Image: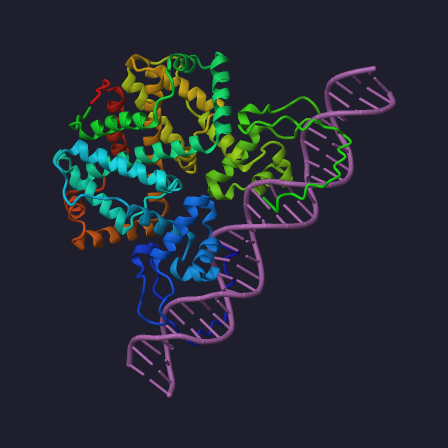
Length: 249
Length: 249
DNA sequence: CTTCTCTAGGTACAGCGTACGTAGAAGCTC
DNA sequence: GAGCTTCTACGTACGCTGTACCTAGAGAAG
């Protein structure tokens, strides 16, 4: 907000355009095309694809408005006709990625199996798009494809007998776990040097005597767990937590 | 990386300084003070406190190197003597916040009660520092205070009989849940307009017939749940998942 | 045809992280 | 104490970011 906008006393506004009544903040509420004027040279899908391509290969930070516009062969500011804010570009990217789910038309009937499949698909998607988990964790994000996923999750968990609200909470817990796991994998894989330092630091901390339980945990810990095994192990716990009967108290 | 550094052919280096052998990337491995030279005008603690003050009141983005330096009465670049990268400033902030835990010297013996207390403290901290959850979710972050927290968690969960590695996984799940919850609270509280649009959009999506289970969930959902109740409800499930015996298969 | 709305894209600005270099203070060795 | 060394403070400058604003011109609606 730069210096509160001087508000010029004379504002002729000869065009008398009625100040389009508050464009919605949510990009999914803005029509992609109104039908007037020249037809756009790009689409939301192509823009999202370009941005995802950059982010996949060079990291999320590389997917700047300039870079994405250049990848499309467009001028930087032209992008703002499609995407009023950078935030919205991220929304488009996330929803485009959510289109990668292969959701069966109907639940199989085995809740645990269906949820396990969903989690594995999600992890695979996050491994393909390393920038995604951070984004999902940061913002709710509700595009058409994300809604399709949500709908499927609700269908799958219908047999639990839980109400809609509780199943939404369960989904948040479920997604949160997968995101977090993927995110951790990414940061761990990112820097070998970082990881080596971390181990050294933790060892030193354990040796200091200040953190006895940490030291003991280190001592009793076996070899580093296989990531996929660790994922399934905790996933099973999460699913159990979801399936467990509501035990108040 | 600007044009790969011309590499001047003549590099006399009369001082013959031995190129300090790779300063560690992890800030906790760098000594705060080496003893030589003039004594610093600031400390890591005061820098973290200044940054936290700005971030608490104006948001994380406002806590730029320039702003923090100005708040300390220092020149911008002076900050880089204490904090070699912006990342490290974030590390300092997170660890300073982790100092707010009030951890009892010994576990009470009631695992569920201890974990519940820990979660409530964490949520309270995150409510005081709205920028914190996003940061915790984005990076592991291991300062002395975070280690104290970890040690306490390990102590509290010792009676479960789980090994060190499994208890670390449990902690990740536990922390992840609290972070995510706090994060969601923040984004929800941030924009009334955003929330209103979201509800409208979801309602419209439900009415479209494309998402039948979502529609049904909406229909059967009661009044919006009290946040604290929802937190405790899911927290209980998470704790149960942690305490459940390891059931392979 | 006229009118209006839309799109494309250039220019410009404030703010970001930070590389680099200089000046001088404070500790160590003699 | 002298002198060397190593640290701190900080100004300047660069490349990058998101994006406000403006001008042309394309093309549908009346």
